[in-house]
Amino acid sequence: MSTSVDAAVDHAEDAAAGGSRRRRPKEPTFAGERSVLSTNDRRRPGVRIGLRVLVVVVVGGLLLISGGPLLWLFKSAVSTSQDIIREPFGLWPSGIQWQNLSDAWNLVHIGRALLNTVWIALGSWFFGLLVALTGGYALSVLRPKYGPIITGAVLATLFVPGVVSLVASYLIILDVPVVERNLINTFWAVWLPAAPSAFNVLLMKRVFDRLPRDLFEAAKVDGAGPYRIFWSIVLPMSKPIIGVISLLTIMAAWKEFLWPMLVLPDPTLQPLSVVLPRLEQTSEMSLLMASLFISVIIPVLLFLVFQRQFLRGAGQAGALKG
Image (cartoon, rainbow, N blue to C red; front, side, top):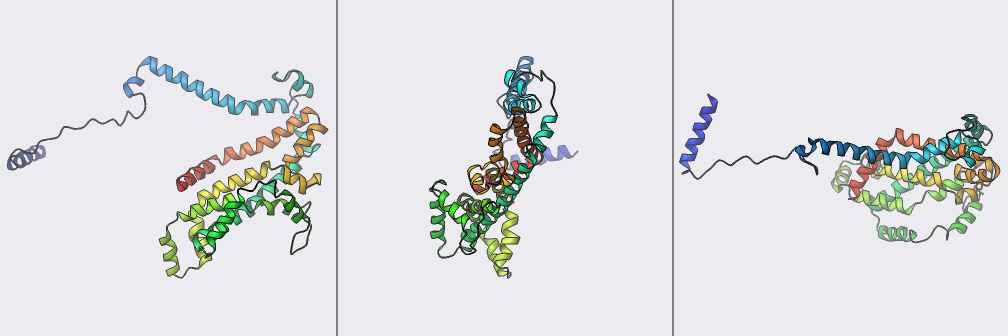
């Protein structure tokens, strides 16, 4: 009944308009065809089998390239030194040597070096993030009169190689101005020089520049000060870029070799990056491979556990920079 009434109304309107209005044909929809191959192409047996073979080859190749070295390192970590040298790709001719992992942890003290690496990475992350957040906030949100001069000076430091300032930084660590203390063989000697990263400060400033200024003005009208704006507005809106800078800072601290070797001559304080090259000359091949496997598998496991947060933060930071 309702259909006939609607048709009558449409016919009356067409007649009133002098027949000028015509029904438009429905446009074809292509909701299901959003790839190179259409739905009809995928139904063909040859295309379907070819796609499956291609997926298996691509995924298998990626797994082999990414996981192959790690699997070989695990095989070598639980093999004897003779098997590693004579048959590098043989599957345990002399049996699996699980005690290599415990010997690397207890005899070579790889666990102590791993703990030192964690402390160095956490301290570098904290102080580096503190400098990046406060520096970017001061230059972008507070905007002092001499802000452009400071921004230019920070940008200029990117063109200075780290080797040029190596001697000056070492002399400062030997006798820190004002406090007049020697920081050699302390983690402070690694944390403090790694904190002022010009790249992190400028990256944080660029992200803060894209935050809406209306929020800051509204917060000032409500009586919020600089510290309240920083804590309640800027930090919650900067979680993606904070995650990315945290990841970059921890990775840089984890693999740093030259500076920890200079300021931490005590073997009990040295990180993995300094201890592992020394093991090549003082330990057997099996213990070296076991130590390398322990040092590699822990960061891999941490990334697998927190990969969703890392990838989400990297993607959102890329959107902010765009």
